[in-house]
Length: 215
Image (tube, rainbow, N blue to C red; front, side):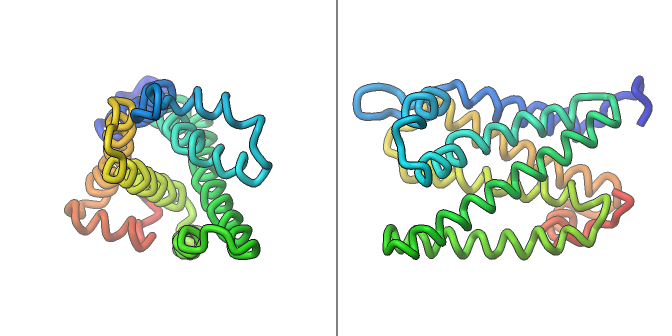
């Protein structure tokens, strides 16, 4: 796409969703014991006084979803192809990093007989994610789109899960969930527009990493 060309509608939606997700890092997500929980504040306050394995896990929890939103916004809204390519690779890197942290935490907890239920769930999620990432590697140019969709799906599940289990949520969590959903929808919209598939078939193509490389 030429630098002066109009940004497609699905990219504008993806950019808005990514920005919302990134900004939510600074917003109250839930009500804590005595004050609202702000992801950026929690990470800055607790990171230095935790064991290294907990610090890495907390970084994945408090930072990676929002970092994903920032690089997705950069990918969507910049007009320079080189920058867009770099941002797309960065977004895929964030997704892969989250998968690696989940797998490492699962192995650590199982080895130390800690949080076994959580470890099994994390291990299962990591296994599914690794298999999906391996399949996307065969798609070449469509691989980054598939990983961006998968990252958005993980964010929707992550923030949606917190929205369900927390008794008092705040607007930061709602913003995160809506932002992730917008990125997810934008990926489906892009495939639907560029391939002619309907929304359901586009979602299926993304879920099976079978999007044509031309998209």
